[in-house]
Every structure is written in structure tokens, then in C-alpha cells.
Image (tube, rainbow, N blue to C red; front, side, top):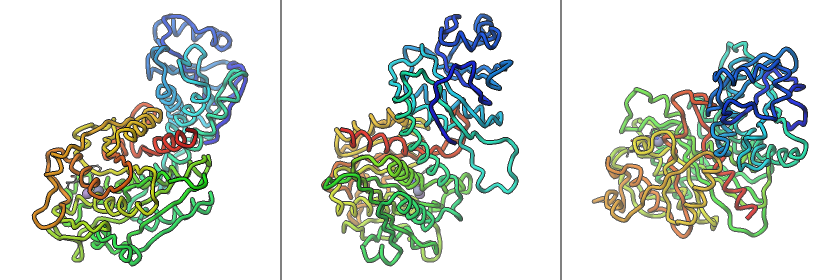
Length: 496
Ligand code: BES
Ligand code: MN
Ligand code: ZN
């Protein structure tokens, strides 16, 4: 999807779908829509007068003008005093989602002047494109029989002349995060027989070549040499080789990097502690954290902000076999601490522990990991909040704010000392499951055992990386979560 910013009267827009977003109308036509309404012979006025459209959030109405655009779509934003970045992103997503279902390839988008709220023109440009790309996303890569509805090809933001430059600046940022998020969603969608650890490594290498950053990939024997036996323990049940992937983006001289770690389990069967068959196919998205890191590096490559970022992806499958790790086995981690593996399905924390220990060598300014880590986070927060934990209040706040701007909201959970008791082991330094109570927190505590000397935040995205249902502006399936959050975080650091 290509995006652009245009200055043109609404009644003269030629698109297959012209979207106009409006807030609560109180039965009155916004002044900025007078021209368009005249071109529609007063259809908008009548629509409002009948009360058939009031401008509530997510409300839509489709009109067919005699000339100009093929279709006009009104999208409600709700209370104009409460119009936020999120509301505008969502309206743009609803617009392209509708366009995709209609088969309307060219979309124009206009935010009625009265409904900007406190959102700057730059932010409008950014979130409009982010939303548009999100709503238009379709996954056709593995279909042999292609459906006939054309995809959304272009997205034009229609603005007033005086806003043009600022909106255009925002559009470029939004386009970069959108490209990154699209990569992440596609990777999440790919099945585990395609998206293997070496496939993720190849994507990292491709990004490195395209944008000119350093990429290092280790195979099984290199991981062994580095002493990451916890990662190896997960990989030992699979004939598919693990990979340890590092990406280094340098946008600034001599500056401690931000480090982003993503869980890259390309399929999680549970191992010997096998998962039930129902929904097991969904465990192809257990690499969503890795996808977020790769998507973020795509956005960084496009935007080239003046900051240093290291991405780290421990990647493996988790399968049962004659060589697989068994419940009760004890392994020695990269940090040196020994781990009793009481449940082979608590594998993510094993590879993340080794990654968290390894990244000390980058002398990071801060470390953020994203992982589909626990089913318990789905029970605790459902599908609308990322679970966040960490060792530094300031960093936690900073990440949370980035998430708010990104529309990827985080909610804090406590890492109190009392919870640590649950992961004490009788035979080793620590065990990899703390049982059912506070399952997300004890997973966080396990990770913390391998954090040393840097501020750190852990994001549990098991409930948010995938949507089981269609939502307004978000078709069911992978969400590409954390690309926007990570990018917002990095950009704020770059311009601080
Ligand atoms: N990948 C799963 C967590 C998960 C659950 C992701 C649902 C997405 C949706 C993780 O590896 C896992 O299996 N966790 C276990 C831990 C338990 C054995 C301590 C869980 O949550 O059940
Ligand atoms: Mn698991
Ligand atoms: Zn897992």
C-alpha cells in the first residue's frame, strides 16, 4: 500500500473510497463537509437529520455520490473532545478494512477539521497511515487460488494546505512502522514448516543487507561454544537447527545501545510436557517477539534515527523426541546458574534467560524483551493489555508511555520478592516453573534471575500478539504487536 498527502477539495477527490471521519454530530453538519454534502445533493445532511448516523465511535455509513469518488464512507470518531491518536488510527483502519472487503483499491482519507482534538498534524499523518496499513492487511502468500477482490493499493490523506508539510512528515514515520508491522504480521502468520529458526535468520540477514546494518547468526555449535545451554536444551529435541540472531543498528557514535530481545520459538509443542492438541497449531506464533524485533529493525532501517539499537533473537523449535529434554533435567545456563527444567513447556524463559545474560556484552543502556511467555497473562489481562514487569521504575514508565502512543497498552505486574520463592529448586539454583499461582510474575522473576547490571523491562505478549476474532480495524490473526511500541520508544530516545 502506497500512501501520500494531498490538498484537494473533497468533492473533487477521485478514489474508489473516500473516507471522512467525523465526531459526534449533534444533528449538525460540520462546516468542512459543506462542499462534499452539496456534491452529494445533501445526502449527508439527510443522513444526519434522520439520526441514522450520529458519529459514534466505529459507526460507519456508505454513500454513493453522482460524481467524484465512487463511494463516500463516513466513520464516527465519538466525542470530538476526546479524539486521540488511537481513535484516528482506528478510524483509518476501519476505512481500509471496509475498502478491502469492498474491493476498493484506492482510498482517500480526510479528518474533518472539527475532530482533530489535541492531536498534532504530524501525529495525524503517522497514525492514519499506521491504521490504514493495519486495516488493509491481507495474507495471501500461501493461497494457490487467489480471491478476486483487489487489495487496497493507495491511501491518500486529504489535508488543508497549511498542514501539508507536517502531515507528510508524520506519514513517513507511520509508513516505516507500517512496513515493519506488516513484516512482523506476515512472519507470525507463516507456518512453522516455513518460518524456521534459519528462516528468521535469513530475514535478519536480508534486512541487514537492505539497510546496511550488521547481522550475526550463530548455529547450534556456535551457540554451544558460547555456553548457552538453556537455549540448547530446548533445541535438543528438534532436528531443525536453532539460531542465535543479533542485529546491530548504529545511528549514533559512541553511545550505549538500546537492546531489544524477542522470543523466537517457531513452534511450541510443549516438548515432553506436551500441550493438548486443541489449538496447538496456534503455537506457530510463539515467535511473535522475534517478529516484533525484526519489524522494528525494518522501521529503523527506513527512518535511520540517531541512536544505537541491538536486536537479539534466540530462535528454536520446542518438540518432543528421543533426544528432547525431560522434566527434571538440570542444565547450566549461559550466566552459570543451574536450572531444573520441571516443565519443558516453560521453554521461552530458558532461551530468554540465556539471551538476557548474553546481552551484557553489549553494555546496553537498557534492555526490553517481548515474548509470548505465559498463558497466565491471558487469564490475567485478556487480549487488550501487554503484561509488563521490570527492575527499573523509570524505564517501566518510559516503555508504558511508548505503548500508549503506539496504541499497544501495557499494564504493570509486581515483581515482589515473595514471588521469587516459587521458583526455588531443591536440586538447582532455580527451576523453570513456579506453578499456577501468578504464572506470569514467576516467569518474569525467572527472567530477572538472568538480568544483571542494566535497566530491564519484560513484555508478556501472549494475550495480545494474536487476535482470535475480527475487531474494528483489525482482522483476526497476527497483530504485529510491539513494532509500533518499540519504534515509538526508540524514536523518543533518538530525539530526547
Ligand atoms: N508459548 C507458551 C505461552 C503461550 C500461551 C503463548 C498461550 C501464547 C498463547 C509458553 O511457552 C508456555 O507454554 N507457557 C506455559 C508455562 C507453564 C508450563 C509454566 C504456560 O503458560 O502454560
Ligand atoms: Mn511453552
Ligand atoms: Zn512458548
